[in-house]
Amino acid sequence: MALKSYFPVPAMQLAQRLFIQSRSLHISPLSSAAAQVALSRYEPDRYLPYEKLEKNLQIVRKRLNRPLTLSEKILYSHLDQPEEQEIERGKSYLRLRPDRVAMQDATAQMAMLQFISSGLKRVAVPSTIHCDHLIEAQIGGAKDLARAKDLNKEVYNFLSTAGSKYGVGFWKPGSGIIHQIILENYAFPGVLLIGTDSHTPNGGGLGGLCIGVGGADAVDVMADIPWELKCPNVIGVKLTGKMSGWTSAKDVILKVAGILTVKGGTGAIVEYFGPGVESISCTGMGTICNMGAEIGATTSVFPYNSRMRDYLVATNRKEIGAAAEAHKELLTPDNNCKYDQVVEINLNELEPHVNGPFTPDLAHPISQLGKNAKANGWPTDIRVGLIGSCTNSSYEDMSRAAFLAKQALDHGIKAKCAFTVTPGSEQIRATIERDGQSKIFDEFGGMVLANACGPCIGQWDRKDVKKGEKNTIVTSYNR
Image (cartoon, rainbow, N blue to C red; front, side, top):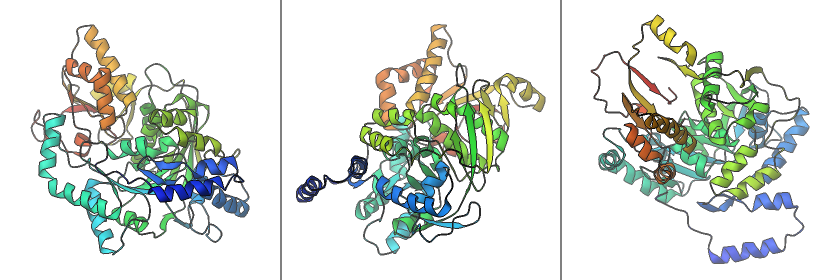
């Protein structure tokens, strides 16, 4: 949970607000419902912006007079001065007003120093800091976390106190990986969020445009300066059929990466659509969007659907789900909208994939992996298996892995190589401990690491190989 929470609305303000609401019965049910839904449990005095977004979008619709993709709807509804801006995909530069900012601890330090130097008293938009990048994996979650807190106490103290002074939420070390925390607590359908990390697009699994930026961009937004983005092209990925058997959401993005390559998404938003979308869970959609970074995409997004509403309900945000349902037209693409490129994937035919080594677009169907490894001279002795990272650290991911480990244990099989698991958040860690998955991992021979980035970003004090020694590891990571 967050180290710093937000203060509730003062009683007098609340009374005034209730009085005003009682005098506003003429407001339509749709607009009043959205207007009174808090952005998050930590920001009870800030509300979903759907009403304003709808107004902006209507202005743009009259100007363009054509069907719009979901990506366009979210971007254009966040325009600063939508009446005046030039809008041309792939050419014009848009001045945007993001809904919120998220920063991880490695990049937040300079961003907060720059914001402090601005002389402003508070950030202009809801913003959060997440401590996940400075925790090195060594011997296990609890001890690694304690060591990181000691080594980085000056950094954590600075970020915590600066956040408290300037109105920035602070998620302490051990609370979880930034993108999982955002998905669980802050992302909402239609949000425009910028984050100081390349895998910020994870939030597209909840129907928002979440874009990775540098610290300077984050400072601009926190200082109430419009954020500039070259109007992206839109690549449509049509999903047909239904996932079944061994196929998972990860296989969708591994397949897409094999098709588009590491440069194929440059300057574009990847937008998923089609009947196959309904067979993917919300966290699965997050996995797919997360790895859009590996194909160079500006971000990735899924249209609002029932799976997102289920996730909002499960994470105690049913009011946001109801508001999104009431504004579904804003959160889904128009019929007959045009994409700059379309890729089609039949989920009925999709085979489990493993991508790599050395580049995330080197895709191998699992049936071909052994043959390809031998042909290329890759070591076939797997030394470590790693599950987690912001891409695959949800409760669903943990449960799938534990289910397989349990089957192996039932047949007397344990891990024959090192095996690590990284939960995406403290909520997930506590839940897998409660539900027994942690015990299964332990019995199988695995180690549960701290709720942090860890080995995925190189924060791994590895001892099992010598420097330069060729070896093979298999991960659910995104690099």
